[in-house]
Structures are given as C-alpha cells and as structure tokens.
Amino acid sequence: MFSMNHQKFLEMDELSLQNVPYFFMIDFLSENVEIYKENEIEKSGLLIDFQGFSNTKQKQSLNKKIEWKPFPETLESFKEGFDKVQKNIRLGNSYLTNYTRKTEVQTNLSLKEIFYHSIAKYKVFYKDFFVFFSPETFVKIIDGKILTYPMKGTIDASLENAAEVLKNDKKEKAEHYTVVDLLRNDLSMVADEVKVDQFQHIDLIRTQQKDLYAMSSEISGTVKEEFAGKVGSIMQKLLPAGSILGAPKPKTLEIILDAEGYDRGYYTGVCGWFDGKNVDSCVMIRFIEKEGDKLYFKSGGGITHMSRLEDEYQEMKNKIYVPIH
Picture (cartoon, helix red, strand yellow):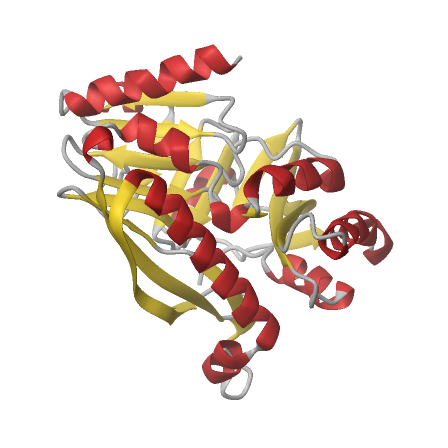
C-alpha cells in the first residue's frame, strides 16, 4: 500500500517541479491520492470552486424552500467513543483528539445543488460521491513561502459579545494554543524561520440556520531547500492535518481509529490546486457523503481534558448545516 501512495506523492513532485498545473485530493489516511491535470478535471466529473481557481458554470437560482433534517446519534452512542478519547487523555496518550461522527441527513437538495448554492472559501463536488464546503485553508505555498491557518474554536455569533467570549473561553483557547503549537512544529519539518504571524483571529461564517464565529491563526515559514518545488513531498510530510487529528499525532491517530468506529475516507483529508507555481489547499471538512441512497454529514470537534460531554455533543450537532442563505 505504502509504495503505491509514495509513487503518487513522487508524481506530484514531478509535476510541480515541471510547473505543470494540477488539482490533487488526498484522503484522511493518505491511502488514496488522486491527481488531475488541468485538462483532466472536466472529464473526472469534479466541480471545484476555490478562491483562486474554479471550473464551475453559472449557477441557476434555487427555486425551492430548503428542507434539511439531520438525524444525530443519541448522546449515549456519542458517549461511547467520547469516553475512549477521555480515558486516553487522562492516561497522557493524547492532549487533544479530534473526535468526529457521521450523521444521516435528509434534504431536498442534491449534492450538486449544495455545491452550487453553498457559500464557502473552498467547495468541491465529486461525481455523486461527496460534496464539501470548507472554511479551512490547509497550507498555501506562495513564492517559496509556506503558510498555514489552523482553525479551532467556534461559537454561535448571536450570543452576547460572542467574539470576546470565544477568545477568552478557557477550553477553546487551550485547544487553539495546542493546534497552533502542533502546526508550528509540523511546518518546521519542511520550512525554516517558522513564526506565528497572527494569533486568534476571528472570522464570521454565515449559515442558513445560524451565524458562527470561528477562531484561526496564521503561521508561516520559508520552504527548505530540499523541499523547494516538491508539493508531493511537502504534503506527505505534513499529513494528516494536525487540526483534524490532534496531538501527539501517531498515538492520537490510533485513538481516533478506535473511538470513531467508522471510516473517514476523504473527510478531513486535503485537496489543493497547484497553478504551476503556487499552491492553495484546504482541509476537507463540512462534508456530505452519499452512501447507497442515504446522505451522511461528517462533523466533530477537538476533545481536551476540559471537554464536557454535552458541550461536545452539541458542537458536533451545531456543525451539521448548509451555508445557503
């Protein structure tokens, strides 16, 4: 298995060293790596809408009232995996674990309609298999500089002084510090002069159900000589993304695989566009997948020793939305 993927990452390196533009998609466990050169995207059935690249057509207006009904698992069912995570945190095996669930949703929207009408920084529709609308950048590589923007911590924007409350919430803050630290370390593997440029920046995310504030930071560095122009090698080194895994990475991955009891697949993997020179990539979150004739929304959040079961259950449910408004 490994050699096959390794081959794909080398292929990415070759293309980027030759300045050939391509779109790539890597699943959570880096087991499936897909590469599409610009002229192959169309026939792959992929629709992509990034800030700097899009292959989409003009959208038709949506002439229907949106029906959207999630069927979240029970608190008891959520608690099973949550307890496994907490036990490991108490044992010192992890200090941040991103615990995610899979929730059935019923809607009168097709995956393609969700793609066209949702509003997000990064959107991809993949031939009747999945759609996502992600607010989270993974890394950008611009003129030999690499930047990452870890996003951790959300709050309902309608609450009083929501942004301030989020910034000062002890649990959210601890989680944010941890992810910033983790990604600073990760970036140091492929870059020199790594520094935090912006800390705890608050963004507004609009959704049909409610508006949320999300907290992010910016970390940057200069790509090391041996990684210059090698997009595949950089990705291989940095994945899985720290923000959707936790820390320390290897042990936390074991905990996740045990606690979640389902296959994340492409959810929480990364995808990106290399334009021949620079890269913009995102973490594939806010993710809806088709299985048989059912749709599942995959969502979750970071668990620390301060996490309360009911709050985490609520956060997982809060994230099951479509940003169509």
